[in-house]
Image 1: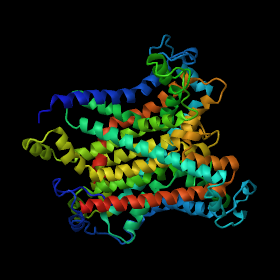
Image 2: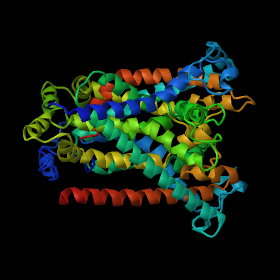
Image 3: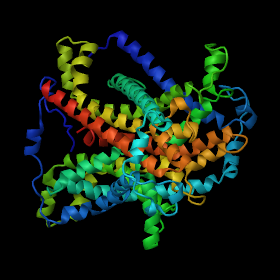
Image 4: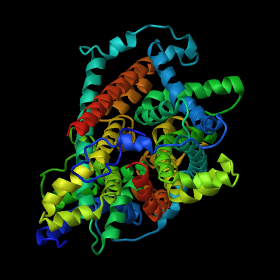
Length: 329
Length: 279
């Protein structure tokens, strides 16, 4: 469906483009009415239109209106003001614009750290769990548990752990390890960014493990046997077989992790409430606050549209460059 | 295939560290729910000095947790059932038919995954209010509205995963069913679905978890009587005292069903990902 296909042959030819062979064996038409596929898609299309497509278009429409608190009751009467909302959002000398840039920066840092650590933890645990040993099944189950926990239950537990006076984090760092003289605050001030990243990594890395485990299972064991026969050790097998074979999985995984963390609302919202500390002001929370605190939905929509455009550009560039590198290699 | 000892040592150290990182919050959740209030208001203790089940009793009265629970259960089950049915038909069409718009459909559905939720929160609210104005159908602040919203959240991933699953089922199976005179619907139900059952189960679990854990839309699109756990669990914190022991007990109770379900079915989940996502 997407640009991702499993390389059919060994690591040497893994980078080759297998789409031609895939296309050849693709779909002979099954007997049936011409309308059949459309009927089957009907519900999915209607729902996507209702919940995603039409609201998105409405969002763009709202971003061009002066939709302030005076028009809450009568939305359609809000005046058309062209690109004014965008001008306000992008005026970096004003507090609104500079706060937006600050929030984007925080979000970018947060995403980079979350994606990086999640992938690193996921690939490390995945590779170490690849060969059978006693306790492997149990460990896998433990690692996956955070992914199954509902976001709010997990994050609320963390917010209890991060309490200054009663939390386990300060108990370990201050009372047991004596790393700090006075108890630091973790949910306000600069430390809140660290807390946010740690909680997010804790919640998300099991997903990376899950996907990478599935990816590792598609690597034929004969490859490792042949490599071992040639005298390749653990590190060489990792570098020459495992990582190249995981490349198509990584391409999708990194993108999904990036989009999730960039749009993350749950973690900061449950951890800090709707007023996030300045240092942890993720873009989703920022827009939510700008919309509901000032009741300026037009401006909030303009910021959302800018966010979507930004994500579209990043995704397009990412897919373009990673796909090209694969065919070049 | 013999592993050198440094691999074994590294493996033990790294995996233990990761297991500790994973388990500490779960341990805190388990033990704090069994502590009396004064113990969670003082310095943290690894080993609870007094054990009590009171938080598990009181949590139902402090906030109307039972009602939130029922709301979440109804919304998540309905969203799961609808999402699975819709995804099965859509995935079957994409996997087995060539038709105009097939690629556009696939790409559009997948790309909705990257939309920031915040972008369509307010418009969706506006649309629901307008639907009510013109058709009388109440979607805002109702469970129906939440079901419709949540089921589309899990659709893209579900369709994607099922297409991969269906693609891996040999076309010969369809054709022999059709030689026997089965139409597309019967082929799907009698031949494809039984073969793809693990994928369907994985998708169902995913859809349920998505609905059970959603926070953003639940915080705006519900009122007192339709509130779900996602919002309800935070109301322990609005009182003067935060009843942390009850919060932890409630977190444990609302997590238990989904965690148990997911861990019991994780095998199918990995199998589904292998067939679908990794393809």
